[in-house]
Amino acid sequence: MTLKNRLLRITHLLFVILLLVQLLPDRSTKEVHTGALLAFAIGLEAVTLAVSFLIKKKESLSLLLDIVGFIFVLLTLWSLATAKFNVLNDLLFPAPGKVLHQFAEDREKILINIRSSLGITVKGFVLASVVAIPLGLFLGWNARLGGAATYISKFFSSIPPIVYIPYGIALLPTFQSVSVFVIFLATFWPVFAGTMSGVMHVDQRIIDSAKVLNVPKAEMLFSVLLPAALPQIFLGCNQGLSVSFILLTSAEMIGARDGMGYYVKYYSDFGDYTRTITGLLVIGIVVIGVTFLFNLLQKRILRWKK
Image (cartoon, rainbow, N blue to C red; front, side, top):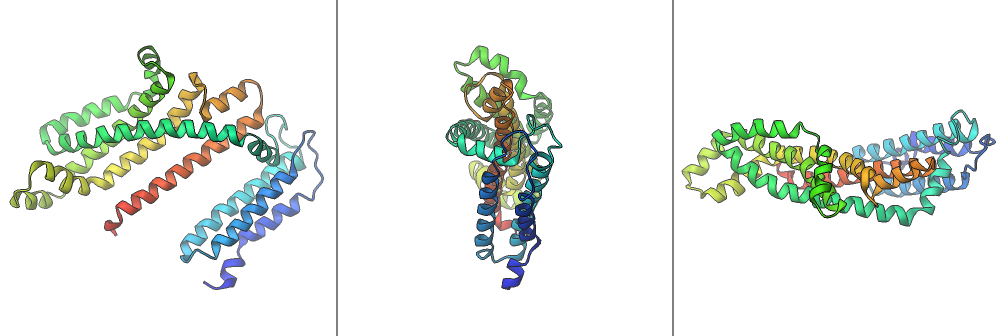
């Protein structure tokens, strides 16, 4: 790609518009921290320019610029509606600069809560995957058991895992273990159902070829059926991962003493909507980041499909 194609993009124009908007007088009665917004926008633009020279694929560059351009548009509209024209209630909807400033002030506290939430999610997700995948392989290969297990999984997966929290609190020693238990349930059934579905839809010719070669049972499960079922397994993992974050945030709002759900609930109870919005944005960014990394892992493992 030429230098013109990298630099003359609408995203950079949107950045300039965001800067020009900040020249308008502030009408909000609260502190808007325009400096924090400018620092973030300039930093994001600098990183975007640097990365754009490293990206070789046109599609990847367009995706990056589209995401950054959306952020600039969002910040511009948000700034106009709050700091510049005070259309929204500045108590409930703080200016973007104030939210960014709050994030900088609470960064250590936020990082601690992120580590807590991610730790619980990883424990529950890994534990559920380790149990669900081998069980799904075995039951999916057995036509009779697999048919019955399909309906059983549909029944239990239709029950929201969050309803088990009262039982978890009564039976388990800590609320962290309760949260891991909820994430386990949220992940187990999608991964289990995805594994069984993948196994039951494996091309019969692959299975027949393995039987002709007298492939042992264990090798059949983990060297033949598992690779063939991986696309469906990853589909179930993606579903479980998405639901896990939603349930974890809800669980943390009920009785946790750390985590991003607790952060949002604690400050919303005190009417601190700046920190509430900060927490909500952080949760969204963390979920997108984890999902992005998981998709990279999926593409890496399933690169043979291409």
